Image (cartoon, rainbow, N blue to C red; front, top):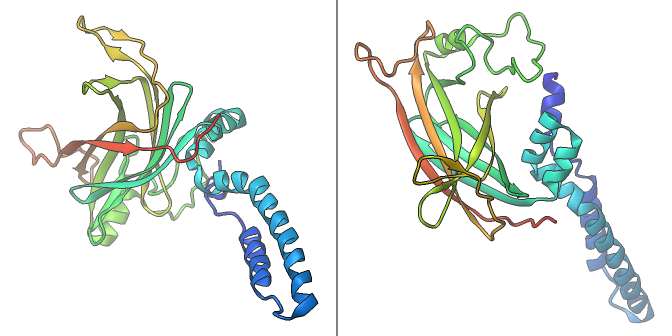
Length: 280
């Protein structure tokens, strides 16, 4: 997939509908205050308002999903339009909650519940004012920075700087960052999750997009995973595992080595997510 195709899924919709509704409402408030004309204007205004409301109801759901449901768009790109439509019919929670770990900020953008599965998407970026270059675990420092080399790949310009070159230009550190879902936290503190999948995709602006998907499952007293369906609820406690560490210019991870500086930072983050768009 080309960069312009990938970014297109995240561009906001045209403002034409918003402008037209605003223009119509402005017209409604600009009524003549005199006699028969004012009465006629009010009748037309009521009719127009009904039409505008009908348009918003008819188009608003689609526009809302296209603007905000990046999770549905992403998994639709992974699995096809049927998956996208399926997730748009789910319970969608818009978050924006953030967690800072070292020089890295993790933001949960969305989570969607659908038929016992939980899906989500977020952003990893540098703390404002920090001088770092973010990289994901599947990429090497000599590969072009900010390009999606997997999931179909991209056309990369010959002069695109690598992560190492970008860090050298800025005098910055290279930080490998990741975020992986652990599951839904049950009332007793145990985790309900199995078959956890995730992706970490570098973005053109230097951030990393993370996503996750999982269904239910708990570990019993014998240490075996037992299928346990995640039930539909008003809200969920979502647990995410965060980590980041420095990578040197040769691509070596500066962690878990007694002879090197250990730069590993890790933590667990529990986020309360409450769906505000209820699906089928």
